[in-house]
Structures are given as C-alpha cells and as structure tokens.
Image (cartoon, rainbow, N blue to C red; front, top):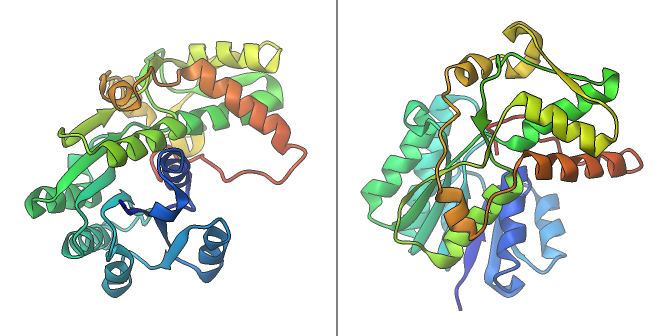
Length: 287
C-alpha cells in the first residue's frame, strides 16, 4: 500500500489536488494535513485520515509525515518572506526525515525571485529525495472571477494589459497536475506549468458567449485595476507570456483554455447566486 499525504487541502489548490488524487487512489491510502480540529473532523467524516499540524511546528509535521510514502506540499499562504522561508524549510526537512520517498512541491512562476519558493526548491534539491517541483502559472480563475464581477455590473471588463497576452492555468488543472506527479513519480524534477495563451479581448469574447450578452474590454491605468495593479506592468513586459508543454504532459491532455474556464466559472457563479458562495480565487498566485 502507498500512503499519500496532501497539505493545504482547505485551500483552492490543495483541494483540487486532493480531489484529483482521490480519483486515482483509494481513500484508505490518502491522508491530509489541516490546521484545525474542525477541518480534521470534516475530512475524517469523509473517511480520510486527518492530521492536525502547521508548517511552523516541526513536531506536528513529523507526526503527520511518519508512515507516508509520497507527499504533495502546497506552498504556504503566509506573506512574510522570513516566516515563509522557515516554514518551507521545516516542512521539506520533516518530510525527508520521516522517510517520504517522493515530494511534489507547488512552486510558482519566477520562483528564484521568491525567497519562500527558492528555500523549498533548494531544500528539495539538497535533500536528495525524489521530487517534482511544479512552478505554477498565475491562476486563470482569478482573472475570470474578477471579470465576471465587473461584467455583471456594467458589461465592461478592464485591464492595463495594452493588448499583451499571457499564459495562465486553471486551478483544477494545476491540482490535477500535482496529483499526477505524485501518483506517477516522473523522473523529471522541474516543471514549468502554463496553460494556453489568451488576452483580455479573448476574455471579453468568452464572457459574451457564456453570459449571453455583449461584454467589452477597455484598457485603464494600473491604479484602476485594484489588487491586480502589481501584475500589469509585468504582463505588458511579457513576463507571463512563456508557453511550455509541461502542464499538458503531466495532464496527458490539453489544459483548459480561457473559454472553458469562463464557461465553468460563469455556471458556478450563477448557481452560487442561489447558494452559499464558494471560496474566492481572487488572488492570482496564492494557494
């Protein structure tokens, strides 16, 4: 029996990885790491072994990793770089010390400029453990969620992209890729995961079809794009425009394009208007 451990399962990316892994492995072989008693009870009710722990608590991590053969480690959502570096080193060291044979780490685009991601990647490389580093693209879901909210107000979406395209990926695809990497243990250790290229005119066109009414796109200043303002100078420079085959290779199929993500999220948004809202995906890079 192979025992898998998945962290970050109450978040968007970790939850997607867990759902995909459970399509490949029986519940009895999957355990999760959570931070609260309530979350542990919720997962235990689904038949999963749930361990309570925190990336800052080495003892709790040691207990969770003991007996696990493979682990999917979702990067910490903590913003403080010094804390994040410490957490990532601690979780990798605990996994290796406990005898985990294969570690999948969800890194991010531009990881070498991010102290937290760099610390995790270096710890894995130096440990000698079999691993896969997944440098995830920005989340398509975050851009689509923002656009759906804007389109609902006045039929207009905005960006400061000046027509530049970008390559992002659906959270569901990135979660599936993490599960696939854990299940198959590929020899390749570094993966640059990108979805299909799109621009904001493509997004407006996809929304027009999904919502059944005209949606247009207009360029604005960076300051008018809210929490996305920090991204648009990089988008205009083409920083997020790199295309790679890595995501498709892990998935064994073409990743979801902007039209698919818009259609699925528009449907969920309509359903959510009559139910409890789902967890937000508005942060483009955080798990």
